[in-house]
Image (cartoon, rainbow, N blue to C red; front, side, top):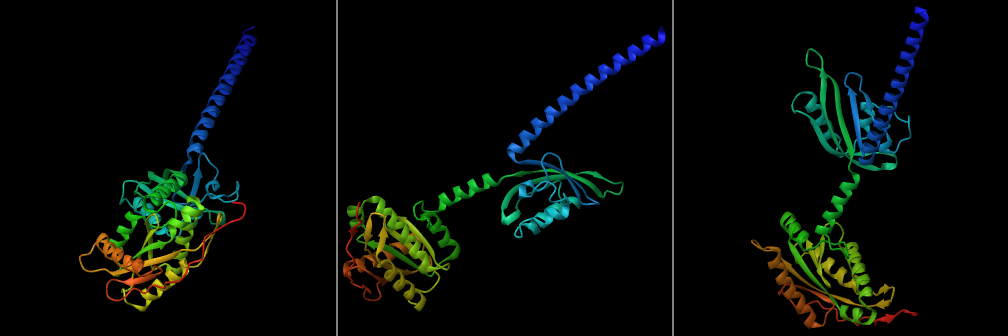
Length: 336
């Protein structure tokens, strides 16, 4: 019968279309999973903003995951995004975004920080451009991407620290001291050398010597505060850049505090050690570079050494203020 044959034909065609539809669904699902895996693995998010309503659509990751929110805890909206911009970055980010909307830049691109739950900070690289305007040229839709670059930023900051910090003490290295000297132009440079440090290494070992240097760096930080740049040149030599004149009460008080603090015993894993500090201080003169001032301060420091150690010297203008105190003996911890 013609009707029955037509029915079977239509049924078979419907079943074929269902199978094809199921196959295409599986292909689409597989492609979606691969896309999500690739994007989530790199921290990349694709977003779309409906400009009139402020509604955001995040295509491959739930909104708020980057900021530590649970699913559906926050609605994806421009206001939510804006409120979680880092306060120090917010003005620059919004300016870049609205500059693009107003046609002042061909696209929106900015590297900035987002603040999540508990103050967690995430670095992102945000890009986007207007993809739809109305007949008057008013932006309707913006599409873009943002990628989590926190790990890359932390690595970059770590490299910067390594490039400008002494790896043992965390103090400024010679390169950073030179840069600080040029930028801040201190009034006084102090050259510091530890007294009897070699005996610590010889008696307790180099590991104890390293521990002592770390503690020296921390004591100098505690005494100097935020106004003074502190660096380590290597070995047991340190440098301070002071914002005060060499003969000022502030400079003298700091020198005396450094000498006094470093003369107090150090408790190390291998035992207890007593050392001292000899310091030469020099005024920064017009035309000086850091090397020239440090050379003069180094010479002043050696006048303290010759006078008996444990004090400071203001250039060559007066006798060294050496303390000449007996330092505690080095004692080895029991069981070491």
